[in-house]
Image 1 (cartoon, one colour):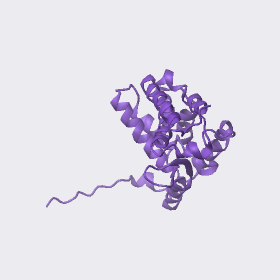
Image 2 (image 1 turned 120 degrees about the vertical axis):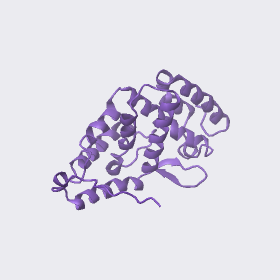
Image 3 (image 1 turned 45 degrees about the vertical axis):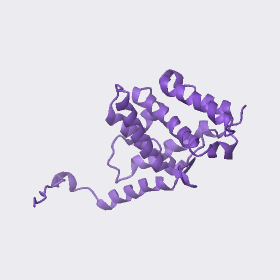
Amino acid sequence: MLQASSISLTNPKSAANIDIDDVTHFLLELDALKRVNRRSYVTHTTRYENSAEHSWHLAMACWSIAEQFELDVSHEKLLKMALVHDLGEIDAGDTFLFANSRSEAHIEEREGIARLQAERGNGIAKLGEIWEAQETGDSKESQLLRVVDRLLPFLLNLNTEGKTWVDAKVTRSQVTGALAFIKDSFPPIHEWLSKNIDYATQQGWLIDA
């Protein structure tokens, strides 16, 4: 049987000033994202999706779509953006897409990112920069991220009989407005969404208004 080879993963000089207690503290700070519940329901369950689950789903979906459509994007940049996308919610909590406070959610989220960036155990030097790039940037990667971030909760609603929409009395025009930008960014996905907005309205999951 082949023996596993043993290699050193650290450079003694670079590791000398690193406190592993700080490192593990930061990892627990990241774990807190699992406690942030969204408004979407996990398919085939009666529970809410949490933001950590959404971040994983977002990263995988972006990666898959980028490869399937052979998009000219940096996969590394895209996946990093997806993984930090919701980190600000550790402090701010999740803000429902159709909430009146939606336009102000970025303020507290940005403060949360700054706090995480300053943690002694944070080894991601450009954490805040990457978050800002996905939040306000206009790169191909950030555009794709925004499309997929709107697609996924729509998909979950479509496969849970519109439970979130029904709970919050969401209207057809609200959903149409929130997804309108995708028509220019990713026409094939927008066409699919439009068809299924019609279906969801026919099913009574969206208020026809």
